[in-house]
Image (cartoon, rainbow, N blue to C red; front, side, top):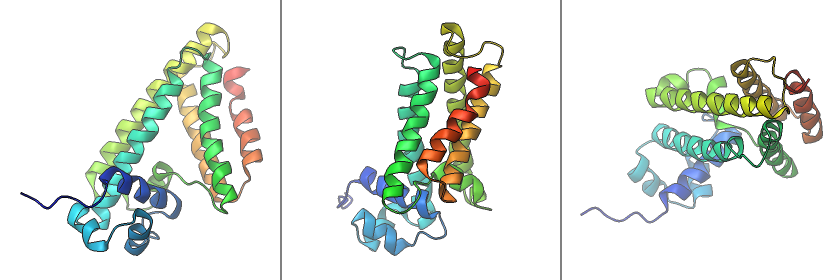
Length: 200
């Protein structure tokens, strides 16, 4: 019988994701990960075997949490289609506002992973996780856009799949701009501009 773990694995993964999303893979030291997770190095490696394995597991956990929140927003029938998109953006902007108060951007494990050369090639599970999450996100966004076109809150002459990709692109751009120091109020205005092709 194996020795019981002395920590909550989900909590450790959440703590690791909180660092990877801000600092990236290369700049996130094992010492820092142990510190924020409140575990010893030996305990971390007994469970995850390597920093790479911890990253993969943290990414999967991060995607699971984010995808669940986004699904709840984008399938919320108490909101019209436009409100669903705006609520999704507000979730991102609220994270950026909170992070800005701490003196940094909120970061995003998805954007960071795509933008870090060679990181996806380290493990095929990274690619599979990102592809599955993107496919789900685009499908949910297209569904929300079609709902908005049906209820009149969004333009009917825009292809829903193109609109979904537009929203993903704008939100990803907000994350990158925040990393570059753009303040949350301006990010809010930029999102409103980015949404114009869908709202008319």
